[in-house]
Image (cartoon, rainbow, N blue to C red; front, side):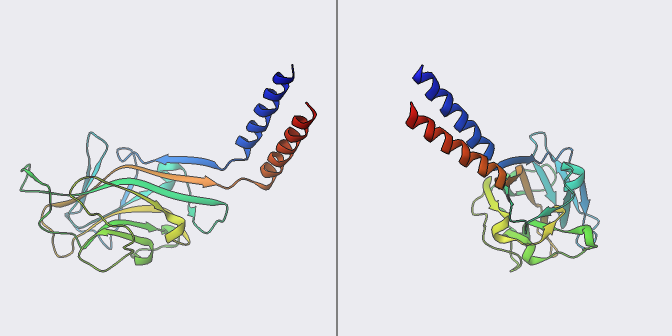
Length: 224
């Protein structure tokens, strides 16, 4: 009987602890159904993208294509200055080059984009220009954007970026970037397996409940 009470107390305490844990919401980007917007100040007539059968997206030519978070996830805006939430973006990235139409793929591109990476834009206030302090340049010839993360091989490379550690303010769109103002041949930027995770801090009430639960469990443990 005492053992049963102990087990019951442990289960109750663990349940309370779980309720006080940070909440996590994962937003997986489905490029095939996501809503894209081309940045008119950056794109040209050749700007284009294509979603492959495996879910990866190719960004061609001189292209900046924005994923609308509200249409894609129902998120009006992401506030990186909120102390109670933390956002992380995980994805795989690859730089790729083809020789001609349908030609053989080269592992290492012979020409690089000026900027290849991501721009976190807030279009709610009429923003039209790219902002270097809100962008990650994973590989490129231009000294522009944050360079804390770098693409260093000729295959798919995984990235995990804690956005709150590098960016401030809010964003409404995630912009996929293959900036080639001076022409970069058939070099493509590719993304896949992109997930944005939102972690919410435990509330004061949940922490208080956790504390009461643990205190009660300790008292009950001493009495049995």
